[in-house]
Structures are given as structure tokens and as C-alpha cells.
Amino acid sequence: MRRTSSPYAGSISFSPGPISTALKALIAANVAVFLVQLFFPIVTAVLGLRPYRVVHDLWLWQPATYMFLHGGIFHILFNMLALWMFGAQLERVWGTRYFLKFYFVTGIGAGALTVLFSFLPFDFAQQLQGANIIGASGAIFGLLLAFAMYFPDQPILLIVFWVPAKWCVTILGAIALVSSLSDAGGVANATHLGGLLVGYLYLKNGNIHPILEIRYRVNKWKLNRIRSRKKFDVYSGGRADDWNRRVH
Image 1 (cartoon, one colour):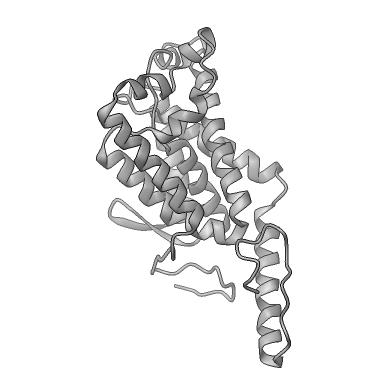
Image 2: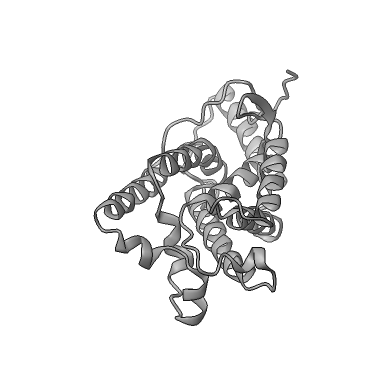
């Protein structure tokens, strides 16, 4: 595999790194709510995303709360694993504040788009109106898209094959699109697709552009190397949204 000079160049060794405080908090919140679900099933009925309830009964909290609910041990296990795998590297690039903002914007946005989708005049869409949609997958798919935009050539294991991140997102997005147009066994693929769409629009029109952000981080990394070689004194500074402003 051809290597580049970027410190974010992909390699076959995929190591997300340590779990930050923000990631620990997100994972802990999801696990805690999942445990509550096991003992109090009513929580799933009240906090899960039911498009009909959101529109007709004004249960407006559901596009946000559904993100913390899961349907089983494997559901939450794979979602939290993906959150760590893709979220850890993105948080180091963005900073904690922007990472959390992106996570909730894509998750809530995916839920809102699912509600709108369910009221389209098509049978395959309207079947979602009475469904109870749960899971962090909308936000996870947003993170997956962002990861592919930042690290397009980083290999990701898709079932049994290593594929570049950009192709992995394309494949998963196509699967979500086709599945959302049919009955796919209760999986809210429209929500997955909504996470991809919201994530793309947010990155494209938000206050951080992926390519410019990578250039900023690369230039900052090079500058710090020059400073360390010349044994300059290093003072606290940098941008206000850096993940750890004490490290420069």
C-alpha cells in the first residue's frame, strides 16, 4: 500500500486509540439507558421514535431520545464499537465540542428526516409511521461518512474484505437506500440514510471543511516538529476547539 506524508494516512492496522472522556460519557449513557430498558420496557415505548406520535401527539423529544435506546445486546455492542472506532479519530481532529455537536446534529437530524420520510405518499414509507425506531445508528452513519471524508483510503473490514473507507460508505449507503424502499425486516434503513445525508450537508456547509481542517492539522503538526527540533519554548495556545489545548 502506498504511503503518504500525511500523519492521517491510512494503513492496514486500524487502531482508534484511547477513549476520551466524551466518548466514555456517550457510551456510558447508552449502556445505562439500555439497562433501564431491560427492567422497564415502558421506556422504549415512550422514548423510542414513533413518527405518528411525533406529528400527531407532539412527542417532540423522541427524535433525540431514540438515539440512546437499543434492541438487544448485539445492537448496542456493535453501535458502541463503531462509535469508538470512528469517533476516537474524528474527535482528535475536530476537538470534543465539534465532535459532540456533529454527533447530536446527525443523530437528531436522521430522526427528523425519518419522520418526514414516513409521511411520504408511498406504502414503503408510511409503514414507518407506527414503527418504534431505536438505536444510535443514525449518528453512527454520520460518523462513518465523516471518517470516509477525512480518511478516504483507510482500510475498513467490511464483512470479510478490507475496502477503503470511501467505498465502505458508498456500499453501506447504497444498501440503506435500497432497503429503505422495501420492507427490510424492521431495520430503519431510512434513518441510516438520513444520518449519511445530514452528515454530508453539515460537513459541506458547516464551519469546518474537512479538507481545510486536515491541512490545518498537518501544518500545525509540521510546525510543532520544527519547534521541537529547535528546542523552542512551547506555550499554551492553538484554536479554542482543540481536543487538548495543553498538547501542542
